[in-house]
Image (cartoon, rainbow, N blue to C red; front, side, top):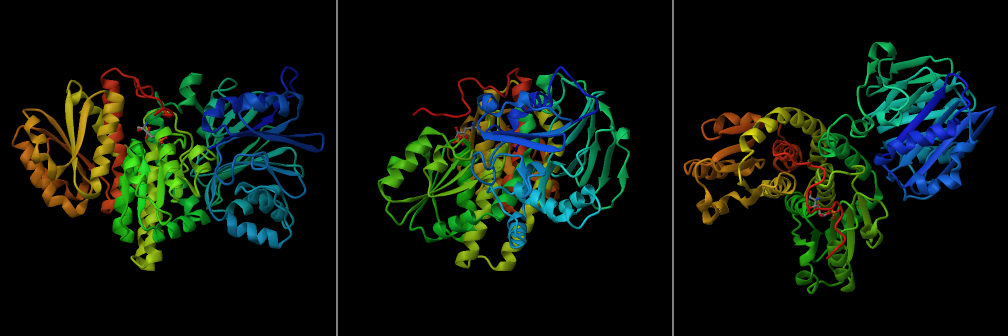
Length: 615
Ligand code: M6R
C-alpha cells in the first residue's frame, strides 16, 4: 500500500507553492507507507522530479518541496513492494525521455513480461519496480497514438493486477491522467484545485467535495477544470458531478477512511490485502526458490509468535494437505528446544508481520548458527528478519496500524497456501490441474472475504451485546479450523479482555468441559468440511451442559445445525483450507464489536505493543 496524490491547479496561487501543497497532501497519506517519498511538477515546458528513501520529515530538507511550483504535479509516499526502499525505487517513475512521471499504488501483475518486451524495444530501466514498466509502456504507446490520453488508455488496458495510477506528461502539460483497479482512488474538487489521491485525508483540509472513481475507470483532469471519467472495458463515459459527495469527516476520521478505528478499517481492507499478496507472490521468483528449499528440507521448522504463530499452524496444515510435507511449528520464544536439533539440511520458515519481533529474530539466528537456511514471510520490506534471511517472501497487506493483527494474518495464510501449492507441484503431490484449480479458488477468496465481512458485521454487533458481560469463552474447532479458533480467541483476549481459550473440539471433553455451565459461551468454527460430523457431536455435548453455542458455518450446511446452535454466522464457504481465510474476518469482527460494547479502544489494547522487540 502506498499513498499517491496528483494536483491540478485551476488558478495561480501566491501563498503556497505546488510542491509545498503536494508535501502537505503526502504527510496526510503517510499512514499508507513511509519508506520513501517523491514528487514531480510540470512548469514552463519542464518536468522536474525529486525522490528519496526515508520518511517525509527526514527527506524534506533534501527534496526542498517548497521551492517547486507549477500547475500540475504528482506525489508519492511508498510502502515498498517490488524492490527494496531506496532512491531509485522511490516514485515517481519516469520514461526514457524523462517526460512522463508516474505514481502508482498496487501491483502490476504482468510487469515482468511487459518489461522484457520493453527492454527488447530498447527501453532503459532504472529501478526494480513494477511501476516503472508503466512509464515506459505509456511512452511506447505515445509513439503510435493521436493523443496522450489514447496512449494512456492503451497502456492501462495492457496491464493486469491492481493499480491506482496518476501520471503527468510533458507532451500534454495541461492534463493529469488517472486509472483505478482494485485499489482506491478519489477526486477532490475545490475552486482552486482538483486533487486525485489514494484517500480523502490527502486533501481534506482543502476540500470535502469528493468524487469516487470506481474499479476499471480511468480518465483525466485538466487545468481548465474539466474532469473526464470513463469505463475502460465499456468506454462508457461517466458524469463526474453526478457522483459528487460532501464528506462530513474530521481529519482524524478521514485517516481511518471514515471508520472509527484502524482495526475495523484493516478488517475491511482484507480482500485487497489478500489479492495483492497472491498476485505479487505468484509472479515472484523468490516463491519458486522458497518452494525448492522447503521441498528439500530434512526438517522444516515454522517459526512465529502470536498471530504469526497461528498463521504458521495454517501453513503446517497447507503443506501437509497440498504437498504432503510435514513440518514442525515452533513458537518463537521456545526456539532453543528445536534449534538444538537443527542441521544444514534443515529449513526455517519464519513468519512475522513486522519483521522485527525479538523472539523470532533470536530464533532464526539460533537456527542459522546450526547451518539451517531461513525463508521469511514478512510485511515490512528490509526489516530485520528479512535482512537476516536467505530468501525473503512478502505479504502485501500495506502498513497495519491497529495493534491487533487482522489483514496481515489472512495475507500470511494466503501466502503460505500459495507456497504449499508450489511445493506440491514440485514434489508431485499435486497435479497441474489440481494446482490450478486450487489457485483459481484462492483467487476467488477476496470476494468470499468481502461477502463474509458484509454477512457478519450486524451479527457480530448483536452477538457482542449478548456476550458483553461474559468472563470466559471457549473457541473450538477441529482439523484445519483449529489455528483459526486459536486466532479468534487471541483476538478476543487482546482487544475485549475476555478470557477466551481455544481447544481442539475433540479435546474439550478431556477436561475443559468441566467449566461449562448454563450460558457459558462456546464458539464453534465449522471451517473444516472433513470433520463436520465429529464437530457436531462436540457441539451437542456442550449444548447439553447448558453452553450458549455459536457457530461459524458454511451457509449450505446451516440447516444441519439449526437445532443445536444458539447463534450462527452463515458464511460463504470454500474448501477446508481456504475457509481458514474466508472465516477469519467473522472472528475478528466478534472481537472488535465486543471491545466496543465493553467500552475499550480496540486500536490500543492495554499492555500490548504493535511490535514486540523485547525478550
Ligand atoms: O510482527 P509479528 O508478526 O512478528 O508479531 C508477532 C506477534 O506479536 C503478533 O502477531 C501479535 O500476536 C498480534 N498483535 C496479535 O494480534
